[in-house]
Length: 472
Image (cartoon, rainbow, N blue to C red; front, top):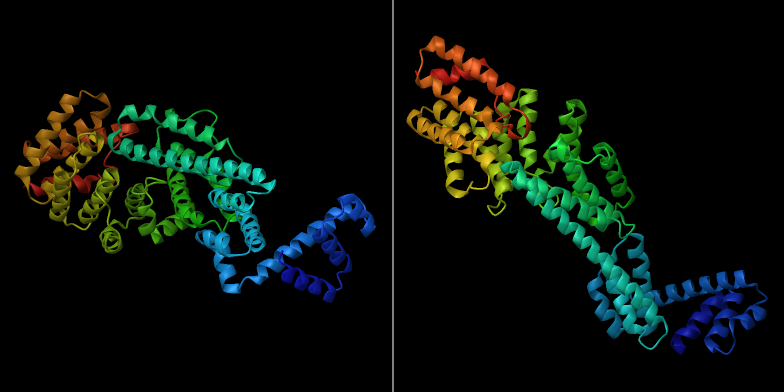
C-alpha cells in the first residue's frame, strides 16, 4: 500500500476507534516482527489473532476498492473485459483487491471460465511473490473445469442433433449412439461437483427418457419427474446464472411432454401456456433440446381440446416473429409440417399441398425415411381433399413402391393406410365405406411403436366421408 494510502487508512481506523486494528496494521506494515511476537504485542491467542488479521485484511480490501471511482469500480467488477485496464493502469494493491472481490463473486455463482480469467491476472500481479504458484494451480484447475463445462455443452448439442435426425428417420443405427453420449456425459459430470454439469447431465437424461424407445433406457435411470424437480431446484438456487432463465423453457416443455405422455392434461396446462408464451425464443434453442417437437405437441394439444381450427392463427402469429433455418433439417421439416397441418385443419388443403410440395423440393429426405413416408401420405390426403386426384394417385403409387422396396414389417401401418387411400378410386361407394373403415381400423391398430405416424390426423368416420366425397 502506498504511504499516502497507509496514512489515510490509519486515520480512518483512529476515527473509528479501532485501536487493535490500528496497532496490528502498523506492526504488519513495518514488517519487523513474526506472527508469534505480534500475538504477544496484541495480547491475543492464535485464534483471536487470526480472526483479527482476517478482519483487518477485509477492511484494507474495502478501503482500496472504495478508492476506485464508483462507476469505474462497478464496471470493472461486472465486466471481465476490463481486467487488462485494471492490471495495467491501477496500483497493484487496488488491482489485487478488485480481482479478489471478483473472485469471491464468481466463486459464489460457480463461474469457472471467469475464475480462470481472474486467476490468470492474479498470476501476473504475483509473478515475484510466492503466491504465484497458488494462483497458477487455481488457474489450471478452473481452466480444466471450464473445459469440462464446454464439453458437457458439446455432448448435449450433439445428442439433440442426433435425436432430431432419429425422430425423423427412425434409423436404428442412431440408437447405438445415444448410450455413448449418455456415458460421456456421465463421466464428464463426475469430474467436478458442479451445478452446471449436473444441469447438462439432467437435460440429456430427461430427453433420453422422453423421446427414445423405452428399450433404449437403462435400469439405473432416475424417474423423469425427479430429474425435472432437481433441475428446477438448481435454477432456483442459482437464479443469477444467466443461461438458466432460458433453460427454464426447456424444462417447461419437458414437463408438458411428461404429463401429456401420462394423460395428465390438467397438470400440463400451465407448462403448455409457458412454452407457448416463450415459443419464439425456445424454438431457436436447438442446441439444448429438439424444440420443434413442441409444434407436434401443440397440434396434439388442440386435437385433445377440440380447437384445431385455431392452429392457423397461432401459426401466423408464430411465423411473424420466427423463421426456421434450413440447415437444421429436422427442425425445418417439423416447422413446415406444422404449417401444412394448420392449413389442413382450416379447410385450406390446396395451401397445405403447396407447403408440402415446396418442402419436398427444398429438402432431401434421403436419410429421413420415416418423415418422408408420413408426409407423402399426408400429401396424398391433402391432394384428394383439394381435388387434385391425378397427382394424388401418382404420389400414392410412388409411396407404395417405396414401401415394397423397404421390406420393413414395422411399416405395415403405412402400407395399410396407402391401401385405404387407393380405394376411393376403385370401388362403389357402399363397398368403399366398409372397406375403408376396416382398413382405417387396421391402421390405427398397427399405428404404434417406432413406426407410428400421422397421429396429428383425426381419422374418424367423417374423415372417410370427406375422402370419398372428394372424388365423386
